[in-house]
Length: 167
Image (cartoon, rainbow, N blue to C red; front, side):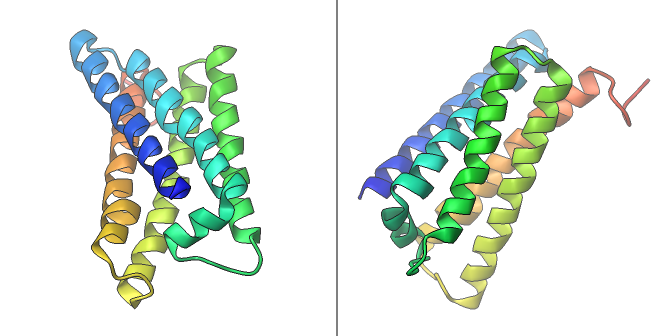
């Protein structure tokens, strides 16, 4: 139950962050503030909340994902990776490391979540988890999440004329 509540909270934060980012991007035609919102909501907050889910509530989260095990090592590793990226994103924003750092952190987290999408998709294809909720939550919505993060990272790369988009 707690793992589902945390997952729903994460999805709401992600959805709100993406909605605000699109609003800012199309309102001002500026990728930087939108990227900052993505970094805060989709990387920092989501990373820290995911750590709580995977480490503190690891048993409930493992049940939710169908990854129950006698050893929570896998859950802890995933949680620590989320925490590391979440705290790095928070530090980047607090200490104003700049757009390039923000882009790298969003791209890094996008790659990380993409790998999770592939993992969950393979589990679905193999029949390890064949329910529609798993497919939607762990594969489809996560892939949409990644696509949105990549959109804002690429928009910022283009706007800032970073390689290979130098003009």
